[in-house]
Image (cartoon, rainbow, N blue to C red):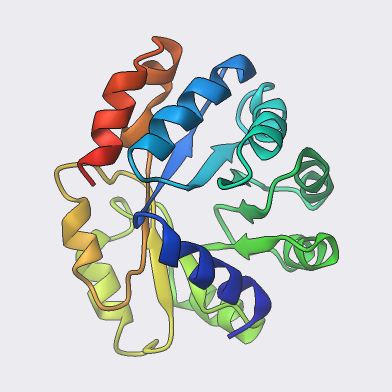
Length: 208
């Protein structure tokens, strides 16, 4: 197990198995959002770099909630890694695998969860030492059946499926032996955050 995989393995022991995938438009909402999620038992939070507010939100959470492990998603360029580290993020997630991003993550001491969707991509990631992988986009790339198929040729690979998963089907993924966690946007959707529906976010988190 490499250092990055080991970090995620340790973190997931102390939180629920769903990692909220957050798109946030106002960084000032980060405090209330984190309060709702942690009250519901979630401590591992991914804030995607899809809005100008993302890095500031990561900075706010890293400084205000020492018990929360906050990282950045949608990392697609190596130079973004330094920005995440400077903001206080502890991990990065990307939609695909990039050796350049992996090297930058190691340089800055961040855990890296790379995305894969095919056998070739899994082989590339594992050949570079990564065995905990994001399966993305999960629903569109074959969902539960594809993950079952991957378990044969890749018995040592553990997945975090993300993309198109909802409260209605996430348990089907978690029942798989090669799935340790999932990424889900339904827990704290962009609309729920924008509408400041903190109690709804808490209730969705608590139901997991």
